Length: 505
Image (cartoon, rainbow, N blue to C red; front, top):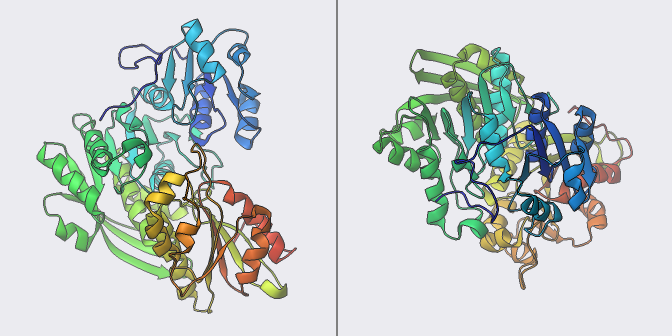
């Protein structure tokens, strides 16, 4: 499968992209704002548009970008000249967008964000991290680890690093770290030196239509690895491991990472990183990894402050990728110990002090696929179990996309059944229109009897509904890829007027 294009869009493989004046449609999005920051750092004139004001838009203006709110033909002249290229997300921006129409009339090349990112990475050692789940967390871990090793990589991430407070950076080093998004096959634009696949599980079936097509895009990505480079796969994930085995059979340099059991189960993939210890100690997971890569055979021990088996696996991937990019293993381990997480990935938002809900902690997470929901709720369950104070897990979940909800209703219900109590909001449709018969009820009707369930269609009533299910000391999670993140502070206010945000007690 090859990347799709939009009529009138230029083929970046055949066209030299002039980045002197760049206009980005949807510039405030997580991916677009990141590449915009890098363009500004490199001296490009940057303009753009978005549907609303936001923190990313304000930050870009402060750096020198001209940004319009709302889409209009005249936005292409924000700099006083027409741009040399227009960048868009073809999945999110309709073809009749007035700025796209104007670009076609003026003969201005239109490219995807992935094409732009591929251009920005030219000449660097490219570390690309792909997978159905965990891309942002693993990419962020790799960046922080490389920074600790003194590499100063350039990077583009789908979320903001808690420590750096940014999602992109133009570094002084020769390494570029980025997420490789498979949702529209755009990851096939890249030519990685190190390609990581964290896991593979059917998703984005609105684009791929079949499971087979979705799996194929990762095989094709493996074949994009440059000569002398490496494909890194998680051996604890069966589909990623199988992808690695197929790639190795085609002659790709493949290294696996994972637990000792997974490594033993996949002897055809050389083990580059074996996790030999996962010990929960308070709010940390002490992790030991045995590295076995060319020029680096070492035992690296570090402490993760982000919970969950999936985060331990992600850290091993980041460690292995960093070593393959040329960094010192021990320094990388120090960076992983310092890793404080990514916004909206089990992000602590506050704790209630005193009153009827004393000790309740509120977290926020981006999980929007059943496997992600399962992983986060398992981590939350492990956390309260380790603490041993009888706390329960209460989740406030907003399904994302009608197609995803319809395809995985049973799996969502099974995952949400890990919580003691669950509030489910209406579906956040994003780019999709409603589908008859597809509502959040197809999830709530399937949740196990042992979990208290409330279907809450009134967004403003959610904090009160969550409070009705919450007891002192509980762990509360807002979860989903849509507007549910706005509810974390509202829930804190509902539970107590004295919530203390920003640092966990």
